[in-house]
Image (cartoon, rainbow, N blue to C red; front, side, top):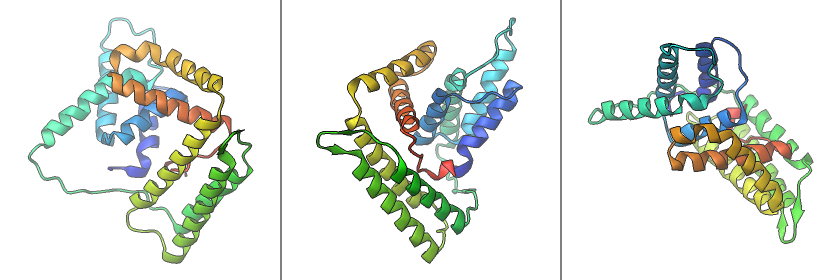
Length: 234
């Protein structure tokens, strides 16, 4: 993916620049960016969509209300992505990845830091489900990956490592979701529904569903002080 490891930060900075002031992105905003990343939407399409949304907003007669969420730009971003996709049909475009040049020591330290956080987290338990065991297994895998990197060096492309980290995080979240009381999950999903309510008419059902999952994922990891394992969070 283009700008693979800068995807989050470049979107955040561009949105803040167009808005004309620093605004910390909400949990919903970060979940929305994750949705675009997982859907393979190019960074250029997201940035173009943000520009288009703000240009339309600036043309409105009354601009007393500022844009306070990336969700406002969602429809314009999807349109920009479709336009870019149509423009690329029939044209062979060579990949030109511009991945951030991480050092072996930086990645290894990130992996070991996450392993330590997993081992010290206070996690819920329920009959037949041991989140602690899953977290310990993930921590062990992270330490092995760190040792492997130090022995072999950073590969030219990091997608394979990123995929392995994604699998570890998904297993951890699945165990966490299974062990948490239903009432707790309902509360988080109700919170997601409240934040999504103003934007439902602007998004397709599939995107709403994905956003709810991403939001729940992020909130529960935060609640139990569990790290994000992706290299995006280095």
